[in-house]
Image (tube, rainbow, N blue to C red; front, top):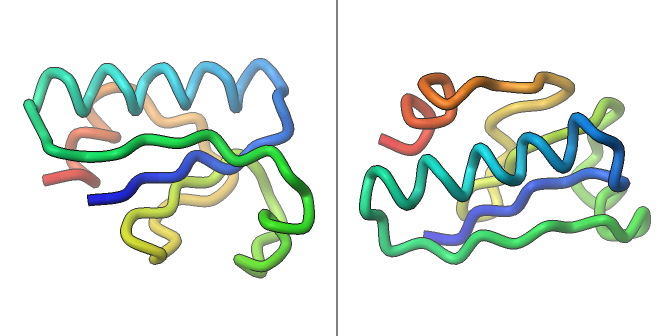
Length: 76
């Protein structure tokens, strides 16, 4: 599983990245979590709000700072 957190480095984006890492650890998933802050790469996903979560190249959340349980629900 490949998970990308798209964001420009704002506090909400940083917090979401940490939450995703924590959820992956708690669920013991075999997943690669990366933070994408390059605007050209972010724009390739055709989204208008940040932060966003992409799982296996599918956008699953846009413009929301999800809590730990919400992220776990997306990953399961």
